[in-house]
Image (cartoon, rainbow, N blue to C red; front, side, top):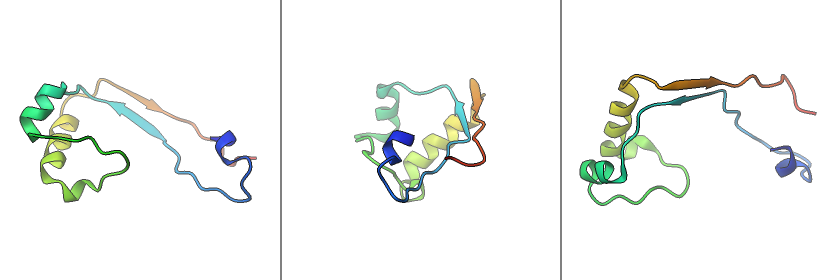
Length: 77
């Protein structure tokens, strides 16, 4: 990230503090649930896609496989 921002006078970043891994779906399972599905190429507002929201809810209701908590420095120089 530092290389990405190095030539800028000011930059913004959203820190990722925690990552959780859950059991996933195969492409066929996802297609069976959502029908024709084109993965987002950027961000997606999940509340505008009820079927996708339902899939996410069911995935995160499963037992978490692992979790990573990142310790970020208080400031970046």
